[in-house]
Length: 292
Image (cartoon, rainbow, N blue to C red; front, side, top):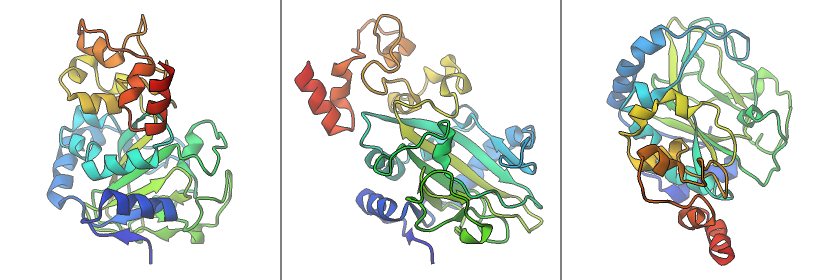
C-alpha cells in the first residue's frame, strides 16, 4: 500500500506526510474535466512534440512544455493553493521558491520502464545534504494511472539512500491513481516511469517547484514571451522567476526588481535585503530586516 491522503487533506497534513515518506498521493484533487480541458489545449502541441532521443527521456515518450503559454487551464494547477502551500513549506529553508518546469508527459504503448532515479540529479549531480530539500514535484494524472499502463513507480523509503544508487526495477511500486489525482514527491525519492504494456497512452502533467536560488530546468522567460507574461497575475509571475531568488539573485540592470522591470513601472522595488522581508522564509526575512 502506497502512502495516500484524501482530497480534503490540509497543507499541514500533506506537508507532514511528504516529509515523512518522501512522496504522497492525493486522490482526485481536481475533477477529470479539468484534466480533459488541459489535454484539449495541449493536444496540438503534443502532436508536434518529437519522441525522446535517449533511453532515459524515452524513445516512445513525448515531453511537451511551455504550459503557461499553451494552456490557460494549467495555470490553475500550477497555482493550486494546496500544492503551492505544500511546496512553500517543503522548500522553506530557502528565501523563495520558484517554478522549475511544466510539461505533459505522454508515455506510448511499448515504452519500457525508466531507470529508477532522483530528480535532483538535474543540478549536475550535486550531492545535496539529506537535511536540505531543493525540489518539490508533482505528477497530475491526465489518464488513470495503472501498473499496466506505466504508472510512475516509487521506491518507498529511498529518500535517504543517497546519490547514485542503483535500484532494481522490482524495487519500484506503481503509484496507481485515478484521473485528476496528484502524486507529490521530493527531489530525493527514487522513482521512474513504468513500462506501458497496454495499447493506450499514459499521460501526466509534471509541474515541479524548486528553491529560488537554483537554475530552472525549463526556461520560463523564453517559454512564455514577455508580451504574454505582462498579462499574467503577479503571483504567477513571481513563481515563474520574476522575483529575486534571494539577496542579489536575479536583479535587473541597476539593482531593479525583475517584476517591476517586466511591468515597466517607475516605482523602484528593492532587489536587495528589503525584498526578502516579504518572503515565505521567516528566518531570512528576520535576518534581512536586522541587517538593513
